[in-house]
Length: 203
Image (cartoon, rainbow, N blue to C red; front, side, top):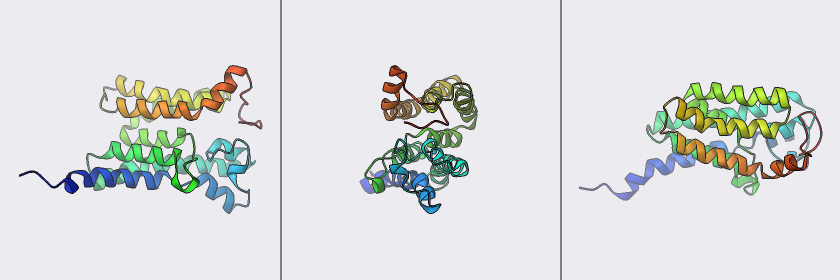
């Protein structure tokens, strides 16, 4: 006897919804508004991530935004792993899409770098070490947030293959491509030599 369709599709859909709802919480917008720093979407590049929060001059808010954006990606995977084992990758995808395209902000969200690190940390912790080394290492040396973020995202599927987690490669490759797509304006500025470094005003 075959199972009813709603039973088959119910858990995967719920995993996606849980992930999306957690991922779509716009911590950067909420924190800057609560602190009186204004509407983050009207500051700097208009992005809702930690790099743009830093442009408000509030380093503490930027750090909190980064950690919370990371935490929501991690939490989505961990919660679904406990409630719906086997659907963790769907939760990860939902959280990432929720961050990048939150319905609450008319689908204009962040670029996903911190949230992707949280996802990687939850799916396979050793990958997060590689991700952090690439991200923070390039950020410290080049001080170009976009380059560091894109390189870190690209390192995730490569590291998954190296660690023999080929089951994670398709998901991480897809998410890395979205990160790069979200940075398309930054890529244009990089090609023009106009991409600002961390600590300076601009995109």
